[in-house]
Image (cartoon, rainbow, N blue to C red; front, side, top):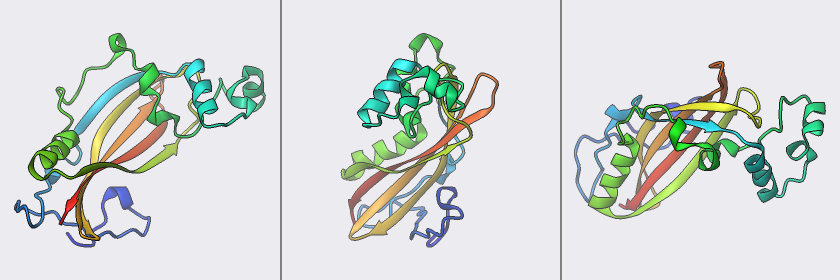
Length: 195
């Protein structure tokens, strides 16, 4: 649908030209399988540890003592050393312990990756990390054990500047041990090829 707004852009005034084609033609629109919208895209449990949080803050060159000193963090009202913004994007690297993972609702096949992989096989092109969005319901702090469930939030195609781009938007909601939301993140993975 040209000009349609998907969930990833709702209310933000962004109206990209989109196509949800039903045919696949190497010289024309790519078939975008919208049936995957709403499907599970993974589940993960992450243990947020102080060391990786401090390392991340240092890597960002953020020397705010709230990220390095428990007393300062407590004085600022945090329940532990807080994680800097965007930490949820990387927290699975040090904190997703293999023996403590929930069942994979995808059966090992992320539907968005399947679409991007198929486009790469058929058309070549590039895979790009697009927009990333974080909505914090409360700060992530060291000591949290967070469960994330991901779904495909949107899939669409856009043509711009001589390229055809297919966007796969994944949304992950991270909840704490009480089941309360902590952070919601959206991630756009883009396949781009020449039109």
